[in-house]
Structures are given as structure tokens and as C-alpha cells.
Image (cartoon, rainbow over all chains, first blue to last red; front, side, top):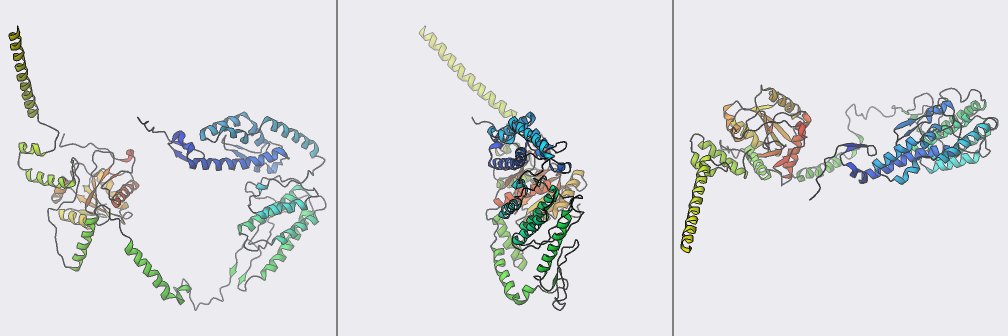
Length: 468
Length: 151
């Protein structure tokens, strides 16, 4: 006996983001397995950032707190950076908590994935203790010494996937080996707008060599005191530049156009302003260099919000005409005849070749009818169908083929006026038998049985008499 | 609504429309123009008639005309509105969980329901099936009591 299929209630799978009524089976479907692994990998990458800050705690500034949030997928709650003195402090505390562990276990049980992965999504007490120690050290050391070695930040913060990024990081590392840099305190995971400055990378950026030259310019300038914001600003610039470079598909040589929209980086610091000024100078030089590369007709808008290239339409004369004047497109002028013919013939063939399914309902009838219609159009046939024609119909209370339905109907219409119950009885396929028949048969069989019994009794009586 | 869709009042007209619709589904609504449920059905039919025009034709049949009574009896129409589907002059049945598979009794809840039903019929017909199952869930199918020979 097969198990009856349970009609399960619909439930929502948060991993696949769909409603299903498969119950526990759903966790083993390949799509779910794929979605689950992608889901967990995504969260793991976010946790990797947190782990980075677990190993290298750094002070969290209030202005950056808003960027320090994390959404815990197991608990379904936001963990923001309010009130924590260290980067990811709240997140670390959450990941250690018992509630999170409970939610994590529930999630893994519900959606599969193996309970042995529990430890990869949480932090242990030992880790927490280590982190707190480091934080204490940082607090005591923080006042005196700011330089803590070269820390650029986790590589995956800068969400650009190219080998350029790695080389860029290396170049940064090499140039900052003096150890005058603060670690990156801004979460570059989320999209943000630097309130201090907006660098807009327009069109395309410079070559890699030019990019390096920018870097060197930067290092030359900041020999004296530098604030962390100054460098974060520079790093942001590079992020934007590289983003644009990658977005352009590495195909075109970028020409950097930098525009400082708001005030300078940090009010107290002096060198940033100077640096920016020099940057602007360099950028304008670059723009001039690249201007030569442009064609005569186009103009480059180097300033203002308008970044569009204006193409002067003086050269393109009115004699040829355009779309609005209804002129033919240029590609049709020369090879007009060839192109159209080429398009027509295969298209026509494909139209005729597309046949309707020959097994479709009433196919034969349709073909015959089409022929008839064509002939009627030509005027050859003036065939009018019978007034008593009826379509192929399967009736409601009918058992048998549809041809019988027509016959039945005809029979009914003919005999509707007459009252002939007796001869209809055997013809109609009715399980219903009239009471008379039933009673008649019953009495007949009963009588028959009685007769048989009586015979049997008499025989036994005679036999008994004979013997005794 | 009736002024948008063709209304047929004679058997000959019904015959010709059945015979002339080739390779498209023919929807024949049997009912009265003034009946409220018929009106609702007509509204849905008229709205979706154009959208399904590539694979279906819609026509209304007035059951009050005498000429059409033959069809009323032939199709066993006892409740109105009743919609009968044809494809290439062959009648298409639909199993919607109700007693009568030969026609659709009642109106549709939404325009989309009607289009779904039509699509199911068209697909089945193209595959060569004379009976198709209804794509609508049972909540959206109108319920009715069917009498067997006035029992």
C-alpha cells in the first residue's frame, strides 16, 4: 500500500524566497541546496569583515557608526553601531550571545545545511575575551600613538573584482610602508556618500601609470601631520576611480575628472587643501591631453554637471534628411534591393512551413472546410449544408461515443410526441428497472424457489417413508 | 455588452459560425441578455474578446428565440448562462470538478479566469484532446445543482 500523499500546508522558505508545500522534502531539492549555499556564503563574507575587526580592533568614530550595521539573517535583526566604542562591537557581542546561537541552530535545522556549521557563524567566548583585551590595550595606547602599522582594510571591502585591485593594494602598501596610516575605519561594504567630499569620476580615468603618479604626488605632500580622514579620503578617491575603470570594461583609457563638490576634507588640516589643489591641476592637464584625442566635431564639457558629449550637427547636412523628415535609413540606400529580397524569401518559406499540429482536434474537418471555403470563394461550389446538421457534441448523461449522442437526440426528437414506454425500455441504457419488473421477477423467482423446495421436501419424505 | 459581441438568434447562424471558425476556439454563450449573471458574464466576455481574438471567437446565443431551441435541447442547457466551447466544429469538454463537463455553467470571477480557461481549452485542442481539466482552483468555479431528468 502506497503512502497517501499528504497535502501539506504552504510554508515560506527564507532561503529560496518562495512558498512551497513540499514540507521537509524541500530542503533536499537541488535548487534549495544551491540557494542555501549562496545565502550562507554571502553571510559568511559579511562575517569575515566582523572577524577582521575581531582580530584588529579599532576605534569607532561616531560619524562612522551609521555605516557599521549588520543584518543577522538567523535572528532577523539589525545590529547597528550605536553606542559601541569599537568597530563592530555590537556585532561581535551579538554573535557571541546565546540568543543568536539558538536562532542559528533553529535556522540550520529548518533549512538543512548541517549542524556542524554552527561554529562558523558564531563567535566563541574565548574570541570575545581576546578581543576585549585588545580593545583595552588600544584604549590605553590610543591617546599616545596613533600609528599602528599598515592596515588598509579587508580586501573585499572594495567590491571590485579585478587583478588591478590587488596590484593597487600592493602599491598602496609599499608606498605607505612608512607606517603613517590609520586603518580604514569606514565600512566600504555599503554604498555611501562621503559627506566631506564627492569625487566624481567621469568618463574614463587615466592609465595605470598616471594613477601611480597621483599616488606619488600624494605621498610627497603628506610628510607632515596627516589625519586619518585625509587618507580615507584618498582611498575613497581610488575606490571611485577603480570602480569607473572596471565599469568601463577596461577597454578605454580613462581620463580622470575630479571635482570637489563640498568643502575640504578636514577643517583643521592644512595639507589636504593643497593636495586637492594639485590634484585638480593634474586632472585639468589630463583633460587637455585627452582633448586632442577627440574628433573635431565633438566638444567635451569639462565643467559643470553636464557630462554629455555634444556633437555639433552642422556638418551633417539637411540635404540627406533624417528620421523626422522620413528619409530612408543609410543602410538601405546602397543595397536596398538585395537586403529586402534576402529578407522576404526565407520569411515566406517559414510562414508556409509552420504547420498546425496535424493531431489537433478536428484537423481533418478543418482541412476539408478550408478547401470548401476556398472553392466557395471562387464561386465554384454553392453547397449549403443540411438544415438538420448538428455539431459533434458529447452529451451530459451519455455513455458511449459522440456519434451515439446525435442518434439519441434524433431518436428523442422523433419520439417526443409519441408515448412508447415499453419499446424504449430495452433501448435506453438505464440501470433503473421499473418496480413492476422488479416485483414480477421477485415473485417469479420466489415461486420457482418454493416449487423446488416443495419437490425436495416431498422426495425426502417419500425416501424416509420407504426406508422406515 | 451585447452590442459588442455578436448575438445569434437562428439555428442557421449558429451552424455557420460553428462551421466557419477554423483552428480557433469558439465560445458560445447561451443565455438571456437581461439576466444579471448573464450580464456579468457578457461583460467579461466583451472585455476579453479582443485579447483572445487571435485564438478564440466569442458569440452570444439568445435562448429565447425559437429557432435555437433545438440546440438548447441538444446541448442539454438547463441553467443559464451556459457556455459551450467548440474547436473545428468539435465540442470541447472541460472537467472543472462539477457534474457537467460539457459546458461551463455560470459566470467567471475575473477576466483572467476566463482567459485561463480558454487557454487550457486551446492547448488541449491543439494537442488533440477532446476533454481538458480546468486550471482554476475550486473556489473560483461556480457551483450548481444539476438535475437528472427532473429528479
